Image (tube, rainbow over all chains, first blue to last red; front, side):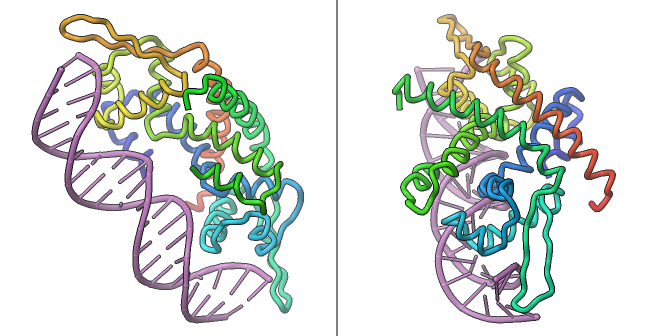
Length: 124
Length: 124
DNA sequence: CGGTATCCGTGGCGATACTG
DNA sequence: CAGTATCGCCACGGATACCG
């Protein structure tokens, strides 16, 4: 993807790429439209698939599945399948996923402040 | 936009919205494809338009203008026009823009670690 | 219950041409 | 030099139907 294009371009400075790649990596890991909400709910405990659908109104089955899969592949959440009938699947945060916590906290704080700025200036 | 849709949906819990909105706000402020690179270069000092184009190979005029404008509207950077011929415009970070620094740092750190994890596990 | 598969629309982004 | 205008692609995400 894009990061590789950057790498391949000799016009780029090593340091620039370095900065960009790593921050982008993080954004991609959590930047999906529903990922934050998923992680948010999983922080409070394990959740089943349809439970998450209910907790996150508006998410489609496709997107929920997709983003859960991405989060799982990134090692941020864990998918446990119970071989029962009817089938049961539970999603839970991994210890690694919990390392995102400080990032969320700092972004949350900044976002609060930023929105306050916007409304204060009242330009929009 | 999307945030308003969330707000309007009575199915959503206030706390969920709160978390989502603020973190999303931050992601939108810095998540644009070129924004980080722009901020990265402006951290080292003021830059002119074409200077940034040279420093960021691959960016189109349109996108550079657009993302500069967004960053300016968010108060993260400042645009100084010098009424000369030929025209000169310099972009610089604002003090407010510099408040992003800790976010970048923490995301950078996490990204480094994350990429290491990925290559270590060698699944891709 | 917990998903895939498929089709489709939107907008982010790129390429090119033009301008004060 | 520092942009705007316009067109067009395509990936992201939504809607719907189907499956083990």
